[in-house]
Image 1 (cartoon, rainbow, N blue to C red):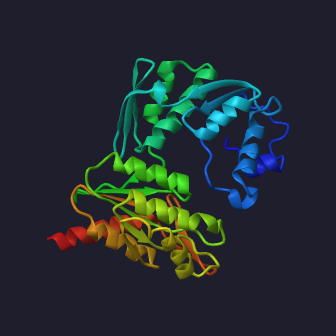
Image 2: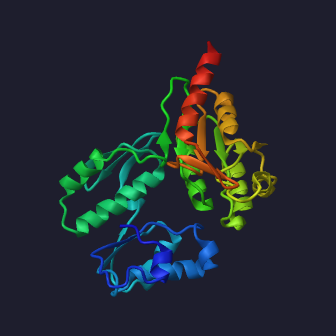
Length: 304
């Protein structure tokens, strides 16, 4: 069960005593609600008290995880890279050694390793045996829109990911960089009627960690798509990446995939599993994976 920081502040889970509460990380996803990282952290920390949890599982590699370890009022078990050996991360898979057992995940990206370690640690606390845990990990299919690889015969990597915060965008681009010696091309935008303060920050991250950036529309909602793009673009100007702007998200995805060379990875970020796009009250069908597939077919035809 996922417990949101909003729900904790509003008392939605009061009266529930969780056997295990898990902390993965804390990013800039709800600062428009909480107002500051301090308030956001305090809201999250409410879950890790005797009133709501009997035991805590905390990511020791996250700076807010370290803070939570220091103030946690229940028993703590930590997880992180230190408990995983011989880690091998690919676009569509992760392999590693854990407690002298080989683990295979059918999903890519370094964050998949952390998510798996969190679940595995929680399962251990609940009495599940190591063999059953490893078998369970290997039976899990990839999660739609989470570092989802779009297979192709073009010699390029295409990944669709829900990354829509500065921290998650940085994480997915870092994961992509570890997988290739080629270029990283990213397509992303920021949602309208949401935290505007993150827009230039995400522009800076994208242009620092990628070689080519296509700034485009996410879900503009009631805002002017061009105005959102311009706010993002302000953050790109201090870095050396080649930056393009294109209001039409489908066109941006097509252009990025068309531009990619063999060995490059195209990251389409921000919408992930979403199947619609909202602009000024109009909602249309839109799926990043479907658009990427069409773009790959178009590229293949043009290569003939």
